[in-house]
Image (cartoon, rainbow, N blue to C red; front, top):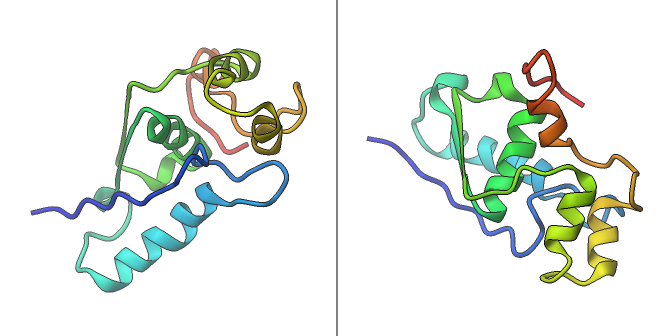
Length: 130
C-alpha cells in the first residue's frame, strides 16, 4: 500500500515567489510532508518519499528535487519543460501575465530558482542545493 498526496498549488508554479508573496515549494517541503508523516504511518526517511509531478507540478517537482535531492528516494517528472530562465519565461508568456512572471521569477537574469537545464547538463550531473 502507499499514500499519494496531491496538494493544490493553484497557478503558483510550485515555487517560492521572488516577491515573497507565495511559498509553494516551502509549503510542500516543510509543512505538507511533515503533516502527512505526523498523521499517517509512512516509511521514515527518503525510502518513504517519492516525488511525482506532471506539467506545472513537474516543473515545481524538479525544483524541489534539485533543491533537496537526498530527501527523496526518487523523482519522476512528466510533461514538464526543462528550460533555462529566458526560455521558461518565453514558454509561460502566452499563459501568464508578465507581472505575475516577474513576481514569481524576479527580473530577467535574477537567477531566482534553480535552472534545471543548467544543473542537469552540468559536468557533475549531481544535484546540489542552491
